Length: 196
Image (cartoon, rainbow, N blue to C red):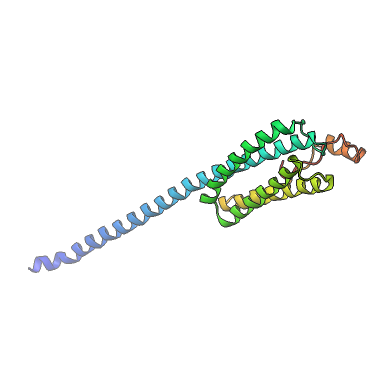
């Protein structure tokens, strides 16, 4: 019995060491599992945001082409409204499908920004469909699209933990110089939305 009492501190030490090892290993495993899950969802959010952005850009370019055919200022190759509206309807279906992933995976700020962006592209749609025709309102709708796009990417970058602000795009010097020389030249393309 005396021998057992002498070995008791060593046995307690072994038991405490084993328990501490188990607790630390479990905590490390949980932490690694959470990190792996976070990385997996970040990858999916990144893909959802990129796919959504691409779908809206497709709609934007179709609207620019149709608007050019309708005589509104655009730097796109004109496209007949009949053919363009059919393509625009398909692009809207694609956008709606991509938005479902944003709704599922996005944080509230990014989802709100995504909605504002597709509302801005719908504003452009009205010009493509001939519902609206005012050139000044067309220019304002293009600016609205650019702001909404930049807001979406800023929100998405924050959600993904990407540091820094989205840089603004400046036109290439040759185009800026040409615009300075002929600011009222209707053959010059309008400025692209922010971030191009």
